[in-house]
Image (cartoon, rainbow, N blue to C red; front, side, top):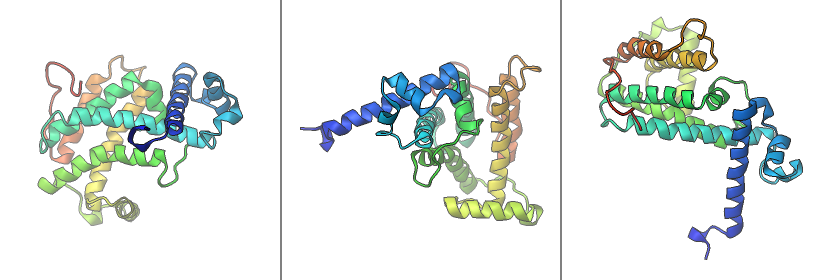
Length: 245
């Protein structure tokens, strides 16, 4: 009897799909994103290009599936680091997740650039694997900030202090994504995220190598800067084993 009602054919198909995505990841790491094509992945698998279309409809779907894998892997790392601290300890939980994201990026630079710093065409249709995984990634930070806001609201600008275009765009985002934060709080959260992820993107693209050989203290300065914006105290990296390991 097939395990849990899954047929042998479906199990073989899922195994092949995983092998295809693993082959795409190898090509990405060894040769760069331009090498991840349907034909190149097929050759890596010992298949013909047309045969690969039995598993992915085209390049966009393949890229979307690989991207979703990276998101899921990163989510596990972030949640593990965050959940090393009890719920309600928002400062340690958020900073642990931020540091875990940088560690994952340093360990997986090609994957990080693929997801966050490349104009890669992927299947971004609502309900696609890439979009669902990306939304789950977003929630790791957003849910924590929402709980923080509900328990201890942080300082936000008055509505009239925001540019009307910003208010309109963030209101549309909140409505479509079901975000339970006022527009002003979303604005503060995004300002922090742009500062943090912008620094990480610059590091992963080697744009700061001219100035720094070690960006960890710069990253810590960034955490120290954004913590008060969320009404939090900066929490230094704990001694001993790394968070989330």
